[in-house]
Image (cartoon, rainbow, N blue to C red; front, side):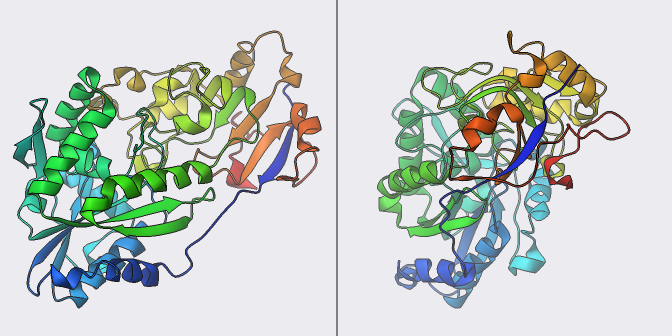
Amino acid sequence: MAFPRMIRVRQNFEAPKVNDIPKEVDLQLSGLNLATRVKPGQSVAITAGSRGIANIAVIIKAAVQHFQKLGALPFIVPAMGSHGGGTAEGQRAIIEGYGVTEEFCGCPIKASMETVIVGETPHGVPVHFDKHARGADHVLVCGRIKPHTNFVGDIESGLHKMMLIGLGKHNGAKIYHRAIMDYSWIEIVRSVADEVIKNCKVVAGLGIVENAYDETGLIAAVAPEQFFQREKELLVLAKQWLPRLPFRHVHLLIIDEIGKNISGTGMDTNVIGRKYNDHKATERDDTTVKTVFVRGLTEATHGNACGIGMAEFTNSKTIAQVDRRITAINSITGGHAPAAALPIAFDTDREVLENALTTIGLTTPENAKVIQITDTLHMAEVLVSEAYLPEIQKRPDLQILGPATEMQFDADGNLQPINAH
């Protein structure tokens, strides 16, 4: 089969960036005048999640140092629902893999899957809260604000979700995702957050917004009573700064890697246009992708392939990387069992392409609109097929980095990753 020739392209995104992260964290937290509430000798639980947030270790270390300056005794709590196989050891390993270690941050890490029920929502849903965070004198909720991969609302993924799913651990995540099936996302997330803020000594939030190049674009310290309004504002920014595919219509999207460090669904549904339907775009999506081919899992995902069920094709290497139990736990807890389903797999990428390119309609394979990306976080440089050339030439935000070349395969018949050049 004749495959399309590919062109390396650089996308130019709007990209505000925080240059001195420790200074900005300290400045933001200082603006809340926390010394009036946090007294010397008091403990402060600081959350660390499972996403691959840029500079997360540096951000958390700076928060630790701010509270240490106040004479407080901060510690870090892994806050990630059922991730890490639903074990304390697995969750600690995830944050340590991001550099969030006791040695680097200068404070203890306290990991547990045990929760305390601290209240109940008006719907009768029990509110679970990490036992170590519950025992602290204060809690700092730290998290990235961005569009959620499934839920839609004024707030989606951010400080509220960290209080809901992150600090709710596996027990909370299970009951909340079930409740969301009966009530709306916004009803549950707000009612749980209200109980947490009222009962769990939340002293502040530290919201992070990233630019399209996976860099820290903004850090905002937020008082608890301002969580909803400020997170709503920051979500608007996060949507503006979200990385995007260079073209709206795609016959075949090739993704080198997916993983929980990239997105809750392994690949961001806001980017690939499958937020409302796992296998096709709807009128509410900005992007239309006919067929998705996933080539591998990130090392940091530890075998959690949640979201792979949205792809139509994969290869045998990827199937071998999947930890079926961890993936099942996460997908079931999230109320989205099909996310763990395995796509059609062939031994080599060449075989995958030969079959995937027959599923795009009447367009011949060599004329197909194909895009290859590293993952849905890192899309500054992408490979696009020659069929896009007329559109590229009209786009000042796209820079051609080289001539069109044949698809690059290794000796085993597998594609070279984007970042192999």
